[in-house]
Length: 130
Image 1 (cartoon, rainbow, N blue to C red):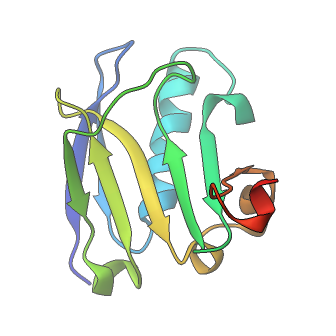
Image 2 (cartoon, one colour):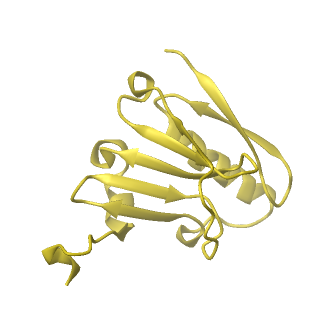
Image 3 (spheres, rainbow, N blue to C red):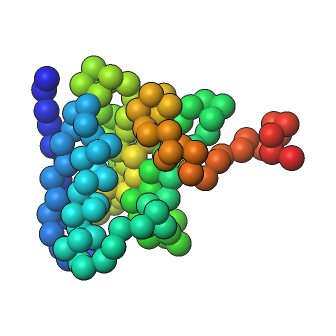
């Protein structure tokens, strides 16, 4: 299986983290976040990573920014669908920092507990939004 790499710099420490782009992408990203938190001496909690999930379209988004930050994506990197056996997109800000991960067909890619605990996205105008 072909492997690529995405390199990001941790905002607080300036440490460069390299994330593998393969079928293990999500685990690699979460692992890199955990390593960075451990190196800061901070425990990783659910509040550190915001996850939204739209069950209607089975799509999740993992935010890797400060909870109050509203950072816009400047560039999107689509992972090779063959390597990841699906559609996973990486979003980067203007400084090239990884800010989020979009996971399509999330029900087959992410653990059930994560999807159940994710912030549920409700579409405006649908019966579920009332």
